[in-house]
Amino acid sequence: MQTLKEIVDFCKFQSFDLNFTRAKAWKEEKEGRVLVGYMPIYFPREIIHAAGGMAVGVFGGGDIKQIIKGDAYYQSYICHIPRSIMELALDKHMDHFDGFIFPSICDVIRNLSGIFKQKKIGKFVKYMDFPQNFLPQIGGVFYQQEMQHVLKYIKEINGVEVTTEALNHSIDLYNKNRQMIDFIYKIRQDFPWRLSIIDVYHIIRAGTVITVEEHNEILEQVCEHIKNDIGVRQDKIKIVISGAFCEQPAMGLIKAIEDAGCYVVDDDYMLGSRMILGDVDATSTNPLEAISNAYIKQSQYSSSIYDIDNPKEYRLAKIVKDRGANGVIFASASFCDPSLLDAPIFQNAFNKMGIRYIAFQYSENINQYKVIKEQVGAFADSIKLWDDEPVLAL
Ligand code: SF4
Image 1 (cartoon, protein in one colour):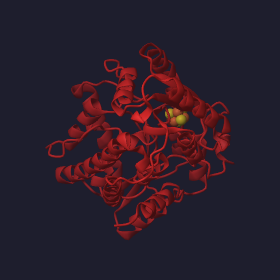
Image 2 (cartoon, rainbow, N blue to C red; image 1 turned 120 degrees about the vertical axis):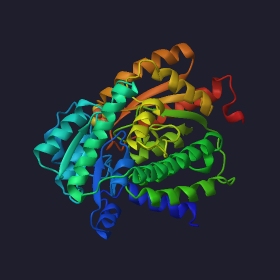
Image 3 (cartoon, rainbow, N blue to C red; image 1 turned 135 degrees about the horizontal axis):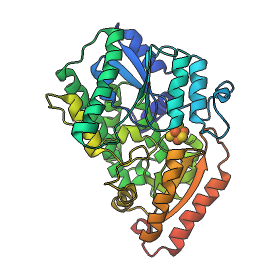
């Protein structure tokens, strides 16, 4: 078994290898393999796996990739991630990808899919609509048609007709993946000092750019390590991060929040890898229906899902309660409509419920965190000093 440090170092490198070299090497090992890039938030990676491919997460260039050409495609009042994805594409970082999926999350991503089409980037470009109708016979059937559409594109490239057995096998692998990620969060809920949030981030993000089989082996080892009483407990409050589901904060910012006095016990940074709560049925005779049912009935709350019968403010409040968190930090990418439109809904509800929160905005390439760090530090101190509840039962 590797040491935790070795695992984290490997994951950190993979997470920010903007040339996606491991995925490229995997594709070149065997004929017929395809690489499909997908944008945030969520995509059912199982179906690509079953078709002999690999779904690769494209989460922007962070603070690593300098934007020169990408800016020409977007107005100044648009978030940063589409610019850095364009820069990656134009600089040929993704030339070995066969196609691209743009999940329906906002108009910016929709427009980005149009630019990819116009520039003829990849063999196919699919803007994938996810259902906003939660009746299995309406939204569910529609979603299955969307997945079949994707499978048709893959078949045109590698000739693979997916079977029920292959889909169920892939579902099973991703179920194991989600179970182990869930285990890591459960351990951290009570013992957040065993694995820092930045390490968790790297470990989960690496899973979006390597095979699920390899990622499952990594997660198994991580779970074994953090079962042990490792790390040193510090005097920090516990918080939940909400709103950072698409454009990712720079790593320095993720780290700065914890350094400023907060254990992050839940977050939506890599929401797509945790979108389905619990298992997808891996024994169904209609696996696409099983995936669709899981999305309709078992999705995590999200700004991209308008489920009026299941208000997201109560769902986030439940996460805060279940994790024993002291408050919430609303972190939104600048100009991110889905996140910023939801923020007042959460905040009005939390004012009534007495849940403490702060809010700030960031950009993926921001590298000055001093003001945010002071804001987070003051938030943590105010809770430590004046909250009636003992922090972490110290
Ligand atoms: S950061 Fe927000 S606005 Fe920008 S592409 Fe993502 S969801 Fe859309």
